Image (cartoon, rainbow, N blue to C red; front, side, top):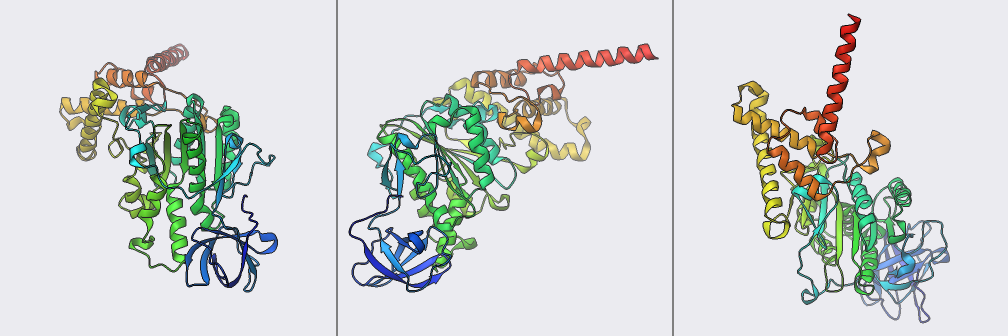
Length: 481
């Protein structure tokens, strides 16, 4: 950690309340965001968040405060929290202070930069609109991602946000020519360790940097880890002029860490206990993720939605920053339709004729219309049964159910659990399949033949295989009788 200074000032601890520490300096009061070191071997790191008077500052500890006591000396490093940047960071795993946590040697080819940067000015932002393919049918067809945009995977607990994010890393990091940066905010150490192994297996680690602020770390560390990852991303975008893929898991944990810091600092909470500065803190992070003339930072972010309530302030404020919202549905997950994306709640600002083209737009609109009509008919089917529908409505239901099954997809990251080989499907094949289903080409093929396949060509193979097995079973039964 690059925090040494030849002209350091010393102060002393006057109060400790959990992660909040008050420090008195007799001469110079450190500015806001200064890093202070104290404790045994200066292992306790504190970031100044407010100046209480001419001699006293209040800071939040970025490390555990066990053993800290009143009267202990505190050293001012005369600088803010720094993050390592440079090609030496590639294929490595870091914590919020820039220390390597992958048991490897310290990186050589790096320099240090402050994590507190402002967002690029409007004059430097790029206005080019371009599609970013993921190889996942339902996303590429109905809610295409923007190169240099911010996509959010929104959903409650256990609906598959991390699985979907990991699958996107697998599909995109291999074909993505730039640098991938993974930022784990307040996630479990198990997930970090599994992700590291997956990236080694996929062979994409050499162009990847991982930064973690885990669930067991103090709120100050979790609150700053996103800024550290962004500083690394900005280096590759601005200095190396490369495209960056930034993956964040989970944005809600960043807001939650800010809420904890705010509560510890004694600020009055706003609605539902969130900090009064939530929108500002989130904007300071999100607005730094931008396209400039030198390069683009494309961001895919998992966003936990508390109790599946999309009117929660954390979800509402996050929505406003996203160019594509991918909403995961517990109901679809319970029906076994994976990825469990709700096509009617999800949207993308790229899904317009001027960007995706007229054919793609028409197919997407027709799919949405069919699925919306099916959703309306579900109540009638539940009460009266499918037989009571008109022939036209029955066709809509058949079409919608086949579309729902075709838009499922086996993932590479779940192969070990499902035993089904993962599939990567191009946008052309996905559109072709949807168009043929909408044209009733597969009305004689059973719905299950379209479930968990890649391209539409596999449906006929599956149906033919099932028909052959059925015929063989019937023939055996006849012989035995």
